[in-house]
Every structure is written in structure tokens, then in C-alpha cells.
Image 1 (spheres, one colour):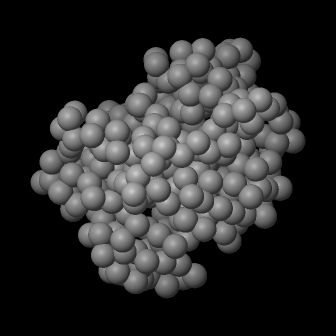
Image 2 (cartoon, one colour):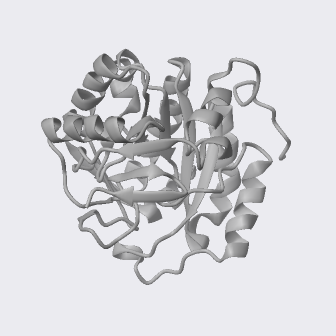
Image 3 (tube, one colour):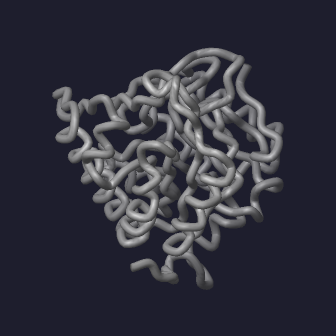
Length: 287
């Protein structure tokens, strides 16, 4: 049964989520045109294969999983130094690929230096969630502020239609078993992050012919585990789903209304590249 749940983490004086709504453009409309962020493309490797995902290095596509280059440690630090000097509105630094942030050691190296030199910056990652539990102490030591976890299903049978395989502990696991492990790790990952004081947003790729029926379950489980916000984004037909259709505007809004009975919805996502920077309303990338 659906109900309107008021999670104390959403609102309230001094809550971390309330702070992020005005300080992080991907968490609240107040910051959308006022706060700048930067994505550092230092994480090229990925440990799962989604049937809708093709990672790429180019300057022509505008979508997740794409960057113009992969930066090394020195390049990333120089890039953020430059942006701090030229953009006084910069408050957020994120690592969002072009692969899986937690599957790349450089993510932790970069965030560690940022913590040491610019601890005032909000530090954020995007992740598929498979390694959160394994890396939670490292993330806590970095004083991570926020995280976005992409969760596309709760039912492993549905997940098996979306994920081709996962790579966990050096083993490639396919089908329902791989999806079951991933989903379990994602949900436990939300709890692990929230227990460390990290604000969690859940992203869900809406694939109308596959996971529309999962939206309510994802929203319900996300809020139950402590997530504060949800962002439902449309499928971009690529890879094995290149011939599938994305959702209509009506389907996308219907999914958001269903999920909103459980958890607040973010409706301003720009499907950013892994090297995007600037204001979310007028974004650029490292070209």
C-alpha cells in the first residue's frame, strides 16, 4: 500500500539534506542556477555491464558515460585548481565516470587530495552501488557528503533483463544471480552510506517496456533504507537497447508521480557527461 512518508532526513533545521538542497544543484532547485559543480573524469573502468550503456571518449555526445578524455591525478588537481580560481560559485566536485567511480583507485586519490586542500567543497560520487559496502570506511574517511546510486530494479528477474553481467570479487556473474547480488549490494549500500552521514539520491533509468512496474518498489525500498531523493531519467537507447524506445513525457511523469508518494523527486536532471562543469542550467564540459 502506498502512503506519503515524511522522512526526517528530508527536512528539518540543520539536516544535511536541507543543506544540500541549497548547496548542491543535483539535490535542490535552490542551487540549480546559483551553484556550480565540476565532474572530474578519472574513473574509466566499470564493474557491471548495463544493456543500455556504452562508455565513450568524445566531444559530441551529451549523456552519462561520456568524457572528452580520462584525466590522471595531476591533470584532475590542476583542473579543479583552475576552476576554483575562475568560478567563485563552485561548491561541488563530483566523480561520475565515465565508468564506475568506486572501481577506480584514482577516485579515492583525487577525493583525498580535495579533502586535504579544499575541504569546504562538497564531495559527491555517482555509483552503481556494487562496491559501496566494501569501500564504506574509505568513503567515510574522505568525508564524502553525497552519493547518487543508480538502481533500476528490485526484482532480480527484471534486473537480469537490464544488466548483462557484474564483476564482483574478480568473478563475472551473469543473469538473475548477478542481478540479485547487485540489487542486494545497492540496497545495503544505501544503508551503509546513510549510517555514515552521507546523503543519498537514487537514480533510476526508466525503460518503459521493462521496469515501469519496478518504480514503486524502487522508491519504497530506497526511502526505507534512508535515501533522501530520487531522480527518474529516461532511457537513452544504446548498446543492446539501441532499438528500444525511451519513455514518453507522460510515462516519465507518471513514474515520478508514483514514486513521489514515497520520496521527493528531482525533475531538473540534465543527463550530464562525466566531464561536465559549471551551473546545471548552463553546463559545459572539458573540451
